[in-house]
Picture 1 (cartoon, rainbow, N blue to C red):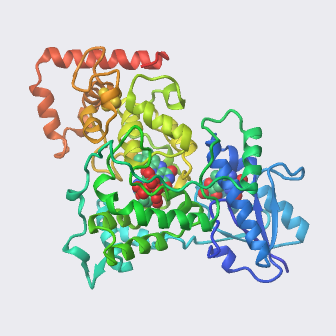
Picture 2: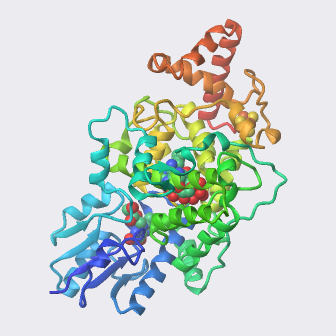
Picture 3: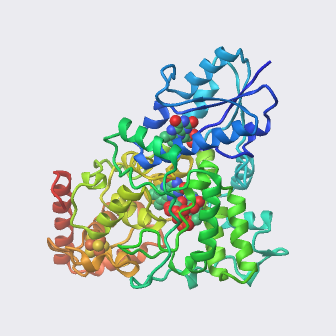
Length: 507
Ligand code: FAD
Ligand code: DLZ
Ligand code: SF4
């Protein structure tokens, strides 16, 4: 009896669980479908990246003797959904058994659980920790802090460990990191991969079918196969990792990547494994090629944050993405979709997102995320934006980062306090404020940095909730010591700014 083996667009690894089960005669099902290409209005680069990588992966499987039933988006008999394609192929091949690797989104997990032909969903073991491992770690803990989870993962994997002690005697070297970057230093950007004929054909398809989605499709330079992704990894280790630690929080207008790896999308769709990426960084440190604070800081992002974020998504269940603990209801302003803004930091972060479908972590967290939280934007709309606009965005990783880490909409499950800041933080870590129409030093007034106005407005609006938090108490003391006139001006100017923004003015 033939069986179907489902491979989704973010499961493009030869070692994926469902493919390991394949026997001669089984049919591998892959499908470009409108349902997946339009559940949010994805950035055109993201759709092209996934379709091109799917086509190349399917060709590779075929070369290696697999029977692949591949549906292209424009095939006339394409049912345009993953369940539809599975049922069509089951009927075509007389299959009564389907094997899948568990998808990274509750929506699809549920869809696969209710098909007339049973689907066996195998656990996705590309990750270091299974759902069961994470649930066991979380059980009985009052607070689910990433740092404790990360230390357990270091011990379990032996990465950067000497016996049971961390290499260098410390788990974390962040004191040596968090430096602003010099604008005049030239850093090597990630390598670019000019489109080959397969990618070029996909680019034409995406241009024709998704002409109105936010984002620039061309020029397209991302790798779309494993060989290219491995080159990008080697390039990062050789040229950028050594200074990753010190500059990981820095932001520069003319350098969208700085020392960041831009590997997340390759890891998320399966072209690189998180283990090989961490091992490459650990080897570079052991060989004396990169400093420890950089190797450790980088490995923590993958072994710690990435695994922890996924653990939270699956532990908390499907309702997590709709949480709104702070009752924020304002609509996402047009400036997130490229509307004009006078804020240089927002223009830079949104601009590079539109061009590249990429922004690094601090731009997502402390610029676009910070602004949305301070302005009280509906977290569901913020979530939809992040899920749409980045090359690496899949719900299992995007939702906890947005709903939890960035918007505090889970009420403090991921972060013990909200990630908010006034303009001073952005000024310290970037060159944005130098070319901004607003004054980062001004506390109030029409030209005061909106982050300054909104920061206090946010803190005061939510005083009841945060007053008891010992990590925040000093902030309220500072507010109380401010003279009443200044306090009144800040609140009035913040309200005026929000009103003008919501009325569509270019703020
Ligand atoms: P680097 O800075 O080079 O970091 C190395 C790797 O660590 C990344 O490639 C990534 O695999 C991993 N990593 C780092 N931070 C995180 C994190 N917080 N969660 C998970 N993995 C992490 N990451 C995604 O992969 N997809 C998303 O949809 C996504 N949405 C986000 C939304 C918000 C609001 C925020 C604040 C963060 C989001 N992140 C997301 C996490 C992080 O910003 C990106 O992983 C990172 O910017 C990718 O760029 P990079 O590969 O250059 O990362
Ligand atoms: C993101 C995406 C897109 C744009 N298109 C497809 C597709 O046509 N076919 C497919 O199998 N997968 C696609 N994906 C990835 C899925 O949306 C992803 O597997 C789920 O969101 C689970 O992470
Ligand atoms: Fe952003 Fe404020 Fe700096 Fe302008 S002054 S770039 S709005 S932080």
